[in-house]
Image 1 (spheres, rainbow, N blue to C red):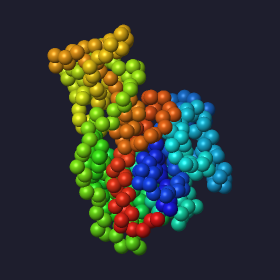
Image 2: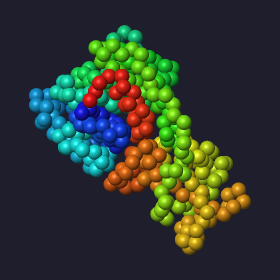
Image 3: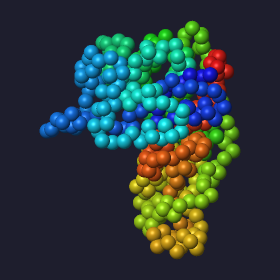
Image 4: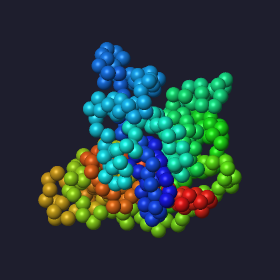
Length: 373
């Protein structure tokens, strides 16, 4: 049994990877706030500062003296006051075996010591934020206030056997490389042997150019200083292999959309059509006609729908359509994923996820390196 915990969990790519590997695993906890923001407005404050964020320190002060369970209730109540649903949580619960008591709305307030000795793998990838201080301070103090600090602190408190940290490749050059340098220093202070590499989804079975930085840390007692990241695989599929056989007509574009995605002067590189290997899927995939699209021969049924435009592309009649949410999920490596949210949310959740096939290959190498089961 592999015990996994995830933060910034999204729709559960690590959990999906373990499922596809047919490994017996248990979700110790997961956490994602669904991109909801805690502003002063939800506290009833008005004026020019009502949209300011409630700070981590202010929440700590408000919950001072509460026991752990009451603090979590208080935090959940704050998120309820935003009057916004956590659609990420809805998708996660529909697809993974987890109970309410193992889900955290805000990873900053997870007490990792409560789960010490219970987690084999911790996975997360905090948003890249500016680090405000350098030089004089040491250790966690250089990253306090950033979500990375809270991820690093969770590792220190939780002490998992292995952690995996994922982020965009821009992290390496952020703030002229100072951010990446500090992140490595912090990880090295956690009593873990770390290795990192850039891994691209196109090298692990998905026809998508999605390169990300992955850091793997092994608890030092294992003595793993030569971890080898998974080797590249030969791509044997194209985008066409991931397309639905039947597509609802609502995904086809009208005249303005057709002309946008097929005219380079209009989309200025923001749209691509009929590529065998798609570009990196993003949170805004398919919106404002941004992302990868498909051009198809018009059928009689499509011609009969006045909302669908039949145009010409390279001398031939074509219709244009978005990728469906189900197709986007398959192109991220998810299989039989239950979609329980609106399209706008499903697109965003897919684009924010980690490529499942990359995690599968990475987990296989980790399990080859140390015994987790």
